Image (cartoon, rainbow, N blue to C red; front, side, top):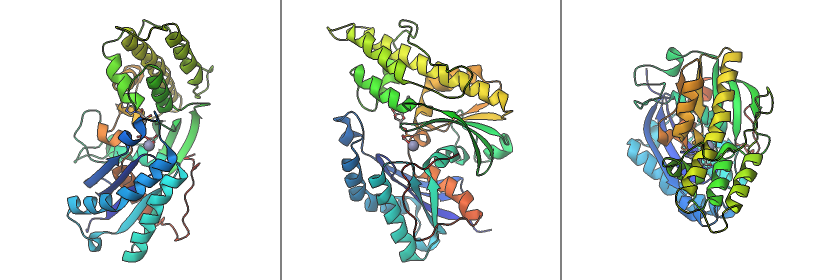
Length: 347
Ligand code: KG4
Ligand code: ZN
């Protein structure tokens, strides 16, 4: 049987990415042009600059992805694109590029939800430690439904019960900042580089996670999260050192903050998996790159915990291609009237 090849485009935030994915599993190419340097001086994503940078990068990134995959348009079965959630101006660049390609090359267009794409990163082949899907075995063969997805990114923190392909139940989410956003904001408070997530993880390596007792918002028995109190507590602690964070202070604060976030995320994910009879926990989104989150969740969960390889945790188009494959196979294609939905939800 001939393979299904999908060209996928992702521009929801600050990465311009294009991938070619075969049968929703095999990555033929996955090109990611990051705008980190552009936004670093602002300590966060600057929306107008992001969309302008996408416009400049999109065509070369698509060309590169096709070249690396050694495919021509005649080898493709569909064009897929993220249409939300994300920044409106950024999403528009990807959606318009995808529409142009699909229309011009007479290919079907598949619309993908960015959060669902993060979930489908687990369907991509990988040999890395912690990954569920190897070249031989798919995550479904290994795990089965339901799965508990902890989606933790710069814009979202959600616990979702995935009962089957396309069947999602929202169990809880953040009431204020997303986990990644908290990492980025606290990184700035601690004088670390942008993005804060990887910088805090690095700084935390030489710190003592018990040196500061930062608060955890348990919010009783709910599966909701809140990180604003924790952020304020870090701000107060930093203010206590007007001379700056010298010596081990920065590392200790980074480690204590990281532990506070990871403690709540891993505990609630493990409890939700147990309560809803999940077969596994799948960590999804940029923050799932965090080593402490991975190891704490493994420690606390009674069921297996999977995480994508680092390059597939943060935004990339391969995960969009993996997700699009399901929709394409189900005949779920978009119309030419497809528009971006910045506030799109998964469930
Ligand atoms: O999924 P993603 O690339 O973009 C969104 O959809 O938002 O996630 C980006 C977020 C950023 O907030 C970044 O600081 C965080 O993921 N992140 C991390 C790590 N690597 C990236 N957070 C904690 N530890 C990491 N190692
Ligand atoms: Zn993302």
